[in-house]
Amino acid sequence: MDQRKYEGYDDEFWVKFWNKEWQEIIYGNDASYTKKILDAGFDGAYLDNVEAFYFLYFKD
Image 1: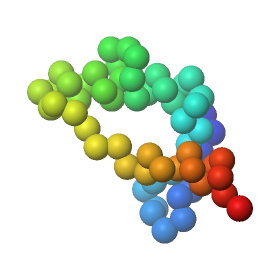
Image 2 (image 1 turned 60 degrees about the vertical axis):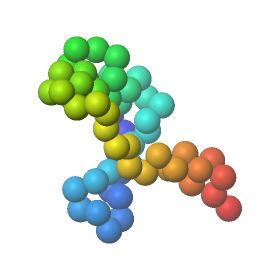
Image 3 (image 1 turned 135 degrees about the horizontal axis):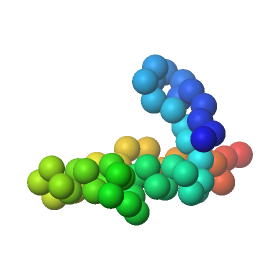
Image 4 (image 1 turned 180 degrees about the vertical axis):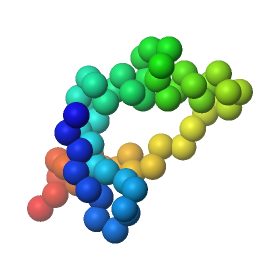
């Protein structure tokens, strides 16, 4: 999996979210974070940095 350090946030990383391996971590199977969140009784989850695509594709 490709990841690189997110400057200023020691425990966070930028990832290539379009990579199938990362998508499977987030959703799409019984071991995914989404499945675990829903099974725990939560109604949803907050996704931070969803604007990242903008900086990847529209950065000057």
